[in-house]
Image (cartoon, rainbow, N blue to C red):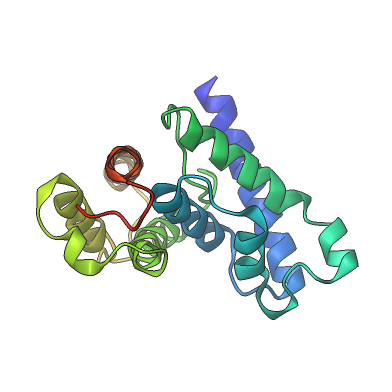
Length: 191
């Protein structure tokens, strides 16, 4: 089941990436997903229209033709929403599939982490709230992951390291989301 889910996410990533590039959107697939994940962590049920406007940029969702063709974004929203609303069981990041070059996957993962941390600030989590405690420690780890060299050689050791880091990031996002959900009193979270 998990492998089937991973393959469908890989296809979704590729389809969404092509669609967003064709539209000359403001954000690409991994960036779009991290924005949405950060919003789910802080807002719990973010507005889909607002998120799609951020992804698409100035064209927003006002263009009727564009509005009718938003299925890839809607699919990402629904899948991500299900992950967050079901206590994040099986949460997966929208990243390139395993058949892509390792350097491309590492770059996407590090970009995802950095942008996720930045997005937390944009949606209401102040930087001073990330200091200390478990969320602060994990956030610092995500920042360190952004500093990883993208120029990695294809070998079994690096593949294993990538898999371990990706799993750590997945669990970190799950922990951040659940912690913020528990601590949020309807306003910007105070950790």
